[in-house]
Image (cartoon, rainbow, N blue to C red):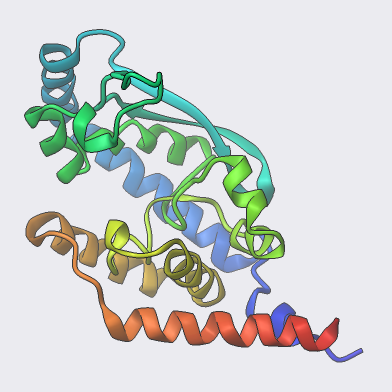
Length: 224
C-alpha cells in the first residue's frame, strides 16, 4: 500500500536516529543551561517572592508527546485576583511590573529545563497545552503531539501572542513535519532575537504554515 501524504510528512517515530541525536544534544545543552542559569533563577526567585510572595512556582498538567500527561512547572508571575463575578482577571491585570518583565524575558520558563532533562519536554517544540485544548484540535492535536512539547517553538518566534489559534496550530504542525536539528538551531537563534526585540509576525512563515495546514486538511477530507 502506498503511504499517504500525511504519513510521509509526519513520519517522526520516537525511535528514529534523528530523535535520539536530538535527545543527546538537548540533554547536554539543557544540563549546561541549568548550571549557567542558576544565578538568573536565584534572581527570578527573589523577584517573584518580593512581588507575589509564596508560592514561587506554578504547576499544571499538560499534554506531552503521544498525549501523555506531563506536569509543567513555571515561576509564578500572576496573582489570583478575580473580578466581581468571581472569574480571574485578564493576565495583564494580574501581573506586576517585575513579573511582566520576567515573562517578557522568559525567565519564568527556566524550571522547564529540568523537564527537558527528564525527557518530558524538549528545548524546541510546540508549546505544551492543556489536554482539553489539544483534544479540541481532534486529529490535528494528535499530529501535533508526535513530538515532545518545547520551551520555545516555531509559533513562538513567528508572532506568538500576536497570532490566532489557527495560525499557531498551523505553525506547530509545520514544525512537526519539518523538524530537524538545523531548524531547532534556527528557532533558538530567533528566540534570542524575540527576547531582545519583542514579538513580530513573520507573514511569509505564517502563510507557508497555513498553506501546509490547508493541504493536510484537504488530504484528510479527500480520504474521507
